[in-house]
Image (cartoon, rainbow, N blue to C red; front, top):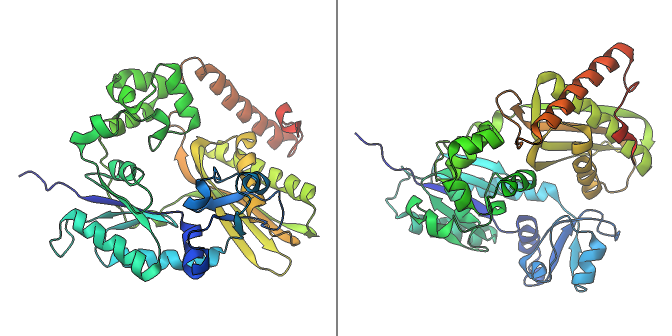
Length: 393
């Protein structure tokens, strides 16, 4: 007997932080709003912004001074992550009213398997009900993708923002998905896109119609996965417990004295990142996520994370993201403790690096060099021998 076709929703809250601020402060509705770390300083960085601000070209990771240049009337608010987490919990509780099969992906998005949802509502009617409830009860807009699997649901939710509901069936892929640029495909980061373009793949359709063998040769095991996704194949189940199964490798240190000296802080973050990198190497992992912890002189603790578009393990690759996370979230008060953690780990042996044939040998030499440096430092002491690139500041 053929199993029942799955119905998967991907719920993506629209401009979540800015929308939460607008919900709490209705006077901000319709105005260009940005959430930024160190809002009082022009060198702060935009975390997210409202759709009104995006019309002026303002976007995440942009310095405040540049955003203000594009949109002189831009309103800046500092992030309130305790508030955002509280609202996120309310959002997921609403989703769980419709099915127990809810998988949080981040603070503002998640998957639902509504195949067996009660009420016998048509999927579009159910999506409309959920969307209206989130808007009415929390004043938060969202987009919902409806599809037979998680990948297509995620792609669908990105197609219409804000307040969109999009159905993406496998039979629609040739017209709706395949014409999109390769960079628009979920799961393809900047580095992978560059490698694919080098071998002539510019659209998702190009990827879907390439031979599976060619992609496995070019990208390893991940090539097979991307080929399947581009052809609408995704066997992953919605797993409510997956959020509790995340592996991580981290290091933290209590500072000799409380400090707000940025140069000193960056040196400590570099040492912590280097230790995490060495532990990733020792255990054979790469990471798709970075987390920092900041504990202030008054013991107030802040923990923030960032998802990487490509799996990494090297210090010089991870450090810019660590510094970015810190600069966005530091409030300029003296710091007592710092921590750096790599999460969302992947086994390097089972996850082939996303390399083309020309760069494979170089990457293997780099990996062996890191192994050699690790052994030398173990023998002669930490930081006795380091890569030359690490001295470039």
